[in-house]
Length: 62
Length: 242
Image 1 (cartoon, rainbow over the protein chains, first blue to last red):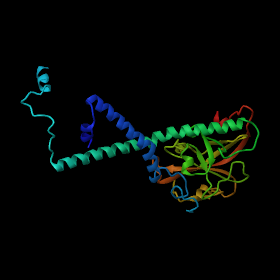
Image 2: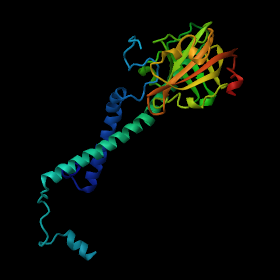
Image 3: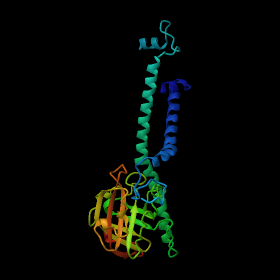
């Protein structure tokens, strides 16, 4: 997979390395900006209240 | 060096490089699978960094901004008390976390801004200036500002101070509950009998999740109002915060 990407990047090793770095940073940006904020409420790590229900269900009682 | 140069020049005897190596399909599949596993590991590692570090950066920035808004509004002098932007600041010296802006509601969107929220549901919180009742708060233990991260450092007798525009409310912790069910709404009742009190009074209840890094149980700290102090011109802090 990564080998395939590397072989299909243009330029010599330095240019490919630079493009790879940009690609990695782009992936990290997308993860931090969009993917993780979306995934976080779905995971049970951030509930701090004692109403015993997930986010976004106000009034559902206990 | 000479041998190396000779190799780089690729003499006629060496095989031509463009011919791609033909791997066995199974070997290729295993290779891709392994790369996917490594990728998944890296993504999970990044998620940990996101949860425990980046959300704090964002939340502290936002909480600082919102806190400044409230303070500058207070500084503008008399006027209608606007509680939409927050009703005041919580100071807990034992938690060593500075001041925590308190706003209405415990929705995640609210708490994720690095603030504490007072309950509106399932049991409505009292406010510090009410004659009787329980001022019930929730904030994050980890990530998003982690304002109640050090809740386990609170001991009986420790001060919990709430600052409003014109009054310091000094509470003293009288009971902690290190672990309870997240369904236990008894802990935020107006008279929290689980803490051992029977009569209506002016209580404060802090709730957050426990153990750290998870949300399996809830950690509860109860306090009772000891005294109030008027805020003076210089906003001199009460003795507990000096």
